[in-house]
Length: 257
Ligand code: G
Ligand code: G
Ligand code: MN
Ligand code: NA
Image 1 (cartoon, protein in one colour):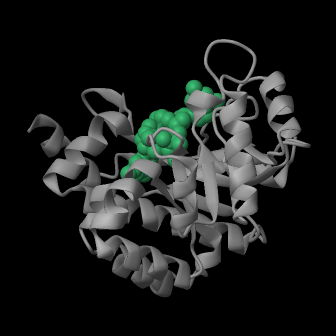
Image 2 (tube, rainbow, N blue to C red):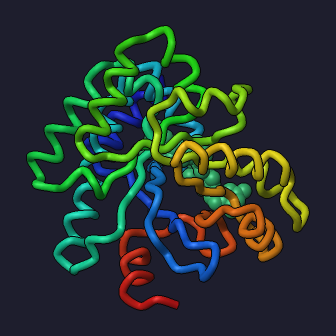
């Protein structure tokens, strides 16, 4: 109840901040796009991670307005970059299962793109493998929603891939453009890849299906090199950058390191 009240106030008092984490080319570490990651700066409890408030937002239905705020903010960022001539950079947003199940997500997405005059091509939607596994066969609406999202030009990425205990052959049934290898296979406390065989299998399978692969959680040069050797081309992780503010992200694009 405490968190629910806080979330309502956060929406009114704009206590949310949407950080951006770069996605980069493994070969030269050049930034090619971003993932939007939400933060809540609470008056009483400081910075709260989405892991701690998204579940409450889902239970209370507040995930719908929170999700709308995230989308609006993302489109506002893209609009700003368009004005600065930085229109080749896209942003991926995380969408929770409850947002999809609310049945309002795609209508809202379509409406906001129209209202703000932004092309869907600048946007990606990240949906976890678990959500896809749960929803895809049982709920025909999820399938229809995914098709509609792609018709808007928006790309679909399967997030946290490999954690949903699905076998690789499930990959072919999802209408996705991008597969994100979960960071648990990439980094832990050592220097090398944790599960090179799994990374290789995902890369091979995704390539044969014409999907792009992004490796998450890259923290060391060794991991970057090993992933390149496995045929992976794009990555994300602290090695190049943690999630940063919009201004910092824009600076990265205007003044490349
Ligand atoms: O940034 P990070 O560690 O702290 O994110 C923690 C979890 O919260 C991740 O699983 C991430 O996908 C999720 N998350 C981050 N931002 C959002 C968001 O805007 N919406 C939803 N639904 N989940 C998010
Ligand atoms: O579940 P999802 O993949 O959407 O969330 C990404 C999460 O991973 C975020 O919480 C983000 O802050 C975190 N993250 C990003 N880069 C790294 C990294 O290099 N190492 C670790 N351990 N976590 C990372
Ligand atoms: Mn994600
Ligand atoms: Na992920």
